[in-house]
Length: 289
Image 1 (tube, rainbow, N blue to C red):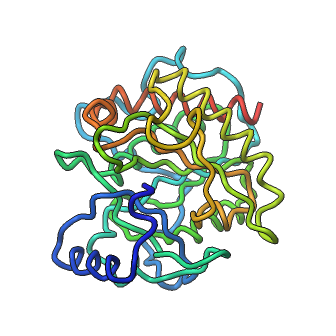
Image 2 (cartoon, rainbow, N blue to C red):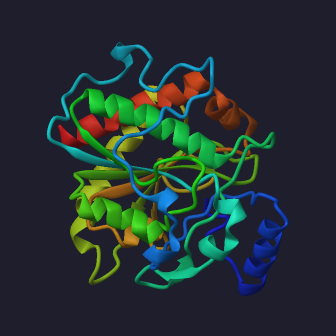
Image 3 (cartoon, helix red, strand yellow):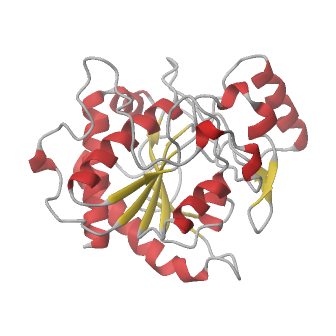
């Protein structure tokens, strides 16, 4: 993720030409958007999610109930933000627009990364998000997704944050996979840094949410903390629109490094993704319970 969020003007132009040529970018991006009108109808938020599961795979939430916490989430509103979108690569004119993230400007969105054998980040995040949403709904939560399919464009990341704001979410989680050098492995949580005048009220609860998510994910999946970024599985960033614009407790998770063979194997596995969803549900139960 961090390897595509800071680009020079010349590098960005090169990436635009690459997208126009039909090639997918190779690193997770986390831009943000200020132009809701630039987001096509297919990218609207949804509170009812298609399964998004390939034939023969376990259905979302279809794992052993004993693996997920039995705590109730009745009355809670949770926003699940699956990173990127399947149609982003075909619409550079939308996703490369620069937008305001309060302490600077970034691209509306990016195409995301992929494994070396082309299992895409947007497909991974969509699958895990749907599995997670099914578990959370079974616990009584109202779940709002920031996108309604894996074939649309966007929405821009500031709009993703505003979806959570408008929903008065009790917690917001953005799901990603990283595109770091292959020798790095493990997961990490990204918490918001203070942007004065904008997100001060969410720093403390987001820090608690981040700790609960980290502990639950580590315990539930056995995936180690990142070896290449952050400390004890936690990183703090001020350059992500999805965190800067949020007025609700919010964190990101990089579930693993898609360029690392070991992490990639877990992320490509339906059983691995189910395990991740159950662990993330446990994190919400801990935080909101």
